[in-house]
Length: 278
Ligand SMILES: [Zn+2]
Image 1 (cartoon, rainbow, N blue to C red):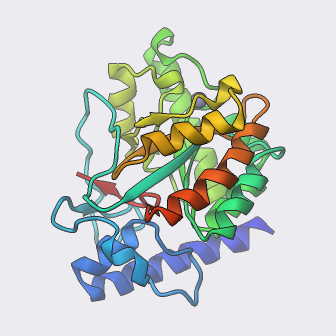
Image 2: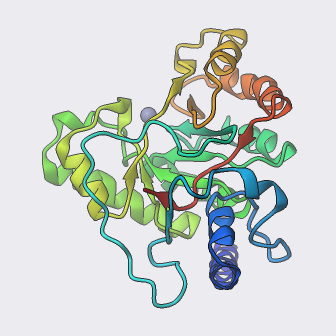
Image 3: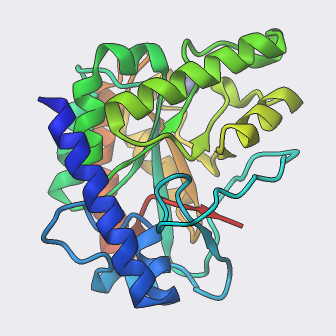
């Protein structure tokens, strides 16, 4: 059942890329923000997408392997530190959920995001993606962006280079198999980065993305505290870290139902970067 869906999604992406090429730079920017769910009937650029980011502030790189025909994948620079926020001056924020997918919590989070027509990022672990490919297929169908959070969530700074490579590569492969595209973003477990992780990430076509606001939801501090941390940290370009797996995440699930509508009412535009920015 999954394969035909994935093929359909790829075809839609290719069709979208071709349409974007014809539409010019503004269309590329709008489509690159992952603003619109990928549906055959949906145009590449929606009206809300146009003011999401300042088009002059950065430019986007095409999706590796999925850009317009003839586009060469660009070799990424090896960074020395991860990105902490997204560019642009608009009231744009990114919600990220780590360590999943987990069938106990991820579907609830996806339901809430769907209710408000919002796209988010999921930094998944390969071993969980392998067990719950249906959830990655759902993320693809609903327009979310999936990033690489290693296979088994180890502390990378304690591993040898070849072990780090294996953790990252296997996860890229299972994401491609279940989600339909290789990931463009990587996040080190525990935020513990090292030189090998940056080098291998760049080699595998992934930019390192950390976060601006940590909800510390994994400490189960209470729904109100999680909500307050998101509200207190809300600002243009902020990337929020929460978790949809790795323990009891029922507070994370319920907090999202509270802070998401508040952020939208406050004029924030929640998006997920579908392409790299430089
Ligand atoms: Zn993690």
